[in-house]
Amino acid sequence: MIKEQNFWLTTVEMPAADGSRALPETADVAVIGAGFTGLSAARVLAKVGAKVTVLEGETIGWGASSRNGGMVLPGLKLGVNQLISMYGRERTQRMYAASVASIDCVERIVREENIACDFARCGHLEVACKQAHFDDYARQVEVIRREFNHELKIVPRSELRSEIGSDIYYGGMVDEGSVGLNPARYVAGLYGIRDCTAGFRAIRASILRQIDFSALHGRHGNLGRPQRHLARGRRRCAARGVR
Ligand SMILES: Cc1cc2nc3c(=O)[nH]c(=O)nc-3n(C[C@H](O)[C@H](O)[C@H](O)COP(=O)(O)OP(=O)(O)OC[C@H]3O[C@@H](n4cnc5c(N)ncnc54)[C@H](O)[C@@H]3O)c2cc1C
Image (cartoon, rainbow, N blue to C red; front, side, top):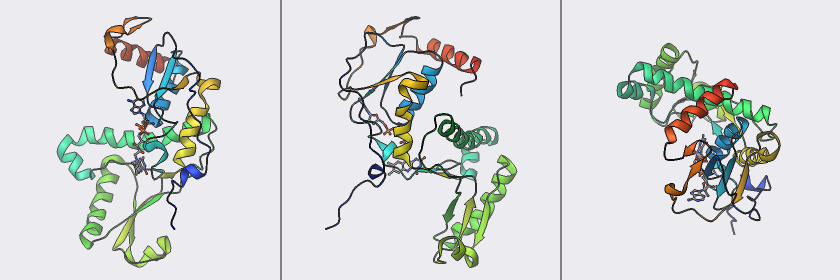
C-alpha cells in the first residue's frame, strides 16, 4: 500500500505554536497565520520594536508554507510580454525587479537567522511541451535581457539530456539565479527566531472567524486608521535599515 505523506514534513519536527500561553492583553500588531507571510512580517515588525503576536489556528507552517515545491524563482505567473501589455514597461520592470530582489531577501533572512533549510542557488530549468512554447522562450529571453537586465539561457533539445537525462521535451530555458530550499525547514526556522533575535511570539489560537475592530486600540490611538500605522512602520523600518 502506498503511504502518502508530505516529504518536507518528514525532514523536520514542526514546532507547535504555544497553546499554553494566554492571549496578551495588548499587542501593537496581531498577525493571523504562522506561514511565510505572517512570520516574516512578525520578524520585521519585532525588529523595529513592535510588540507582535502571531495567532495560528493549526500548527506552524500548516498552510501552503510547508507543502510547496520549495522553488524560489524570479518572474511572475504571467509571461513578460503579457505583463508589459497589461501594466506597461515601467511597472512591469519594477515588478520583475521585486521578484528578483525577493530571492536575495530570502537568502539574507536564511543567513542572518542561520536557518538550516538547504538553501541552494541551484538554478531552475523550464521545459517546453510544444515547439511553439520553445519558440516563445527565445522571445522571452530577449525581452528579459533588454527590459530587466536579467540573463536566462536557452537549452536546445539536443542539449537537454545533459540537464535532465532526457530529450523528451522540445527544449528548455535556464535561470541560474533561482533557488531551491526545504520550505518546511524554512518556515520552522522563521518561527525559531521568535524569542531570540526578533522577539515576537506565536500563539496557538482557534481559527479566527471575526475581528471586532471597534475594540482595537494601539499605543498610537485607535487601530481604525491602519494607513497611519503602515506609514509609521515603513519610516521606522527604513530608518533602521530593515527590509
Ligand atoms: C502545492 C503548492 C506548491 C507551491 N509551490 C511553490 C513554490 O515552489 N515556490 C513558491 O514560491 N511558492 C509556491 N507555492 C505558494 C506558496 O506556498 C505560498 O505562496 C506561501 O506558502 C503563502 O504563505 P502564507 O504565509 O501567505 O500562507 P500559508 O502558508 O497558507 O499560511 C497561512 C496560515 O494561516 C493560518 N490561518 C489562516 N486563516 C486563519 C484564521 N482565520 N485563524 C487562524 N489561523 C489562520 C493557516 O492555518 C496557515 O498556517 C505553492 C503552493 C502550493 C499550494
